[in-house]
Each structure stands twice: as C-alpha cells, then as structure tokens.
Image (cartoon, rainbow, N blue to C red; front, top):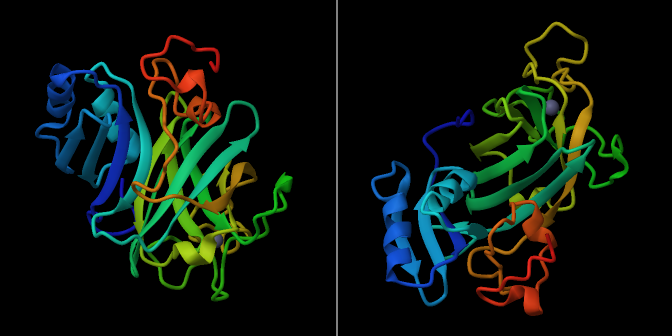
Length: 273
Ligand code: ZN
C-alpha cells in the first residue's frame, strides 16, 4: 500500500469509543491485540478514549475497534513525539455520492503522513494530487495545476524531479472505497495549507505514458472530487466532544451537533441522522 517509500513512521491516533464498563475495555483491548502495525494501546474508560500508535490507515484501526461491537470515531492524529510539526485536513466532495476525508500529518521535517478514505469512486486506480490553488469556485476546474514549486515535469511521488503535488494513485475497491496511507518526503504541511486536493476519474500514468498530457498531469482525466486543505487540530487538541452514538458514519460525524442534548452520553436522540 505504501507506494511512497519505506514501511512508514508510527503516528498516534486518538479515537472516541463507546465504553461503559471494564468489559468494554477488555473487548476493545482484545480487538487490537496482536495486530501488526499497532502498538502502545492506551484505553481510558473514564474519558471513553483510545490512543494507539500505528502505521495502519486510520480507517483500518477504526474497523478493528468497531469489531468489538462498539462505535469508534477518530478524534485526532498526532506524532509519536510530543510535538506536532503541523496537521491539515481536506474534506472532499464532488459529483454524486463521492466524498472523502484526507489527513496530512507532518511527523518530521522529512515525512508527511497522508491518510485518507474516499467513497463513491468507480473501482480501480485514481490519480490523486495536491493542486496549486484552494479555489473551488468552479469545482475542481479552478484548482490550477499540480502543486509544482520547483518547475518539474509530472511524475511519481517517489521521484525527486516530479511535482511536489504528485501523490500517485489510490485504489478503489469493488464497493468504491479507497483507503490509503502514504509517507511522503517532499510534501510539507506548512506549504500546502490553503491549496487543494483533487482525486481524478482515471489512473495517473506517473509521467510514463505516451499521451501528450503524461508529463503534465499523468493523463488521469478530470477531477472528480476536491477539497481545500485546511489546518487541523492535532492529537488531544480537539476539545469538542465527539459523540460515538450508534449509526453515525464517518461522513455524518462532521454534521453531528457539537453541543446540546444530542451530545449527551448514552442518548437515544438520533435526530441528527
Ligand atoms: Zn503532477
């Protein structure tokens, strides 16, 4: 999965998980036990929080937690070291049912972890790129070209003389979902805030094709879904209470009320669904 070099750095993920008793804690603990790429699991019953260090995509860890029969919601992402160098998020929306969320976490000067999920794609490979402008006034068409501060030709993410915005491809499964996590040594969170992230309709040929657009865009077709890259809270910085009530998908969570009766623990009011 990691097309961008190496096994990847650990990062910390913080989840809100519904837990009411020690039995819940044990079930949640065993859901992560012995899983490769997950370590230092820290469970707090009192704050209904689970913090893990991992190299896995956030959605995979969330699915493992939910295999315990409890709802989990990602609350934050941070470096294993105490200090974050920066974090950002792009909420993607586009044609029809396509939507996604992609997080950027600068874990060191030389590594930006890019973690995301995009739903509603046609199965197969889709080019994904950081574009120069955070302008969605004409949808993905007003985002400009691939972010390219060094004036290079288009290429693959592992290649030093490619566009910095070239993130390669993401693979959508039969259900239309792409879940991914890359380590990227050229993207810096502080350079991309205010720009945009675009997922294209076709596969990026990584500059190796014969089409005249190969060295410009990878000939991956038009942008299907895009979002502005915005600064985001790191680990433990998200002070809003995240409800982990049953039935909320990762997409509905962002529409969940941040206060009021709908936020109360153990509530039965699912009006926000
Ligand atoms: Zn490019």
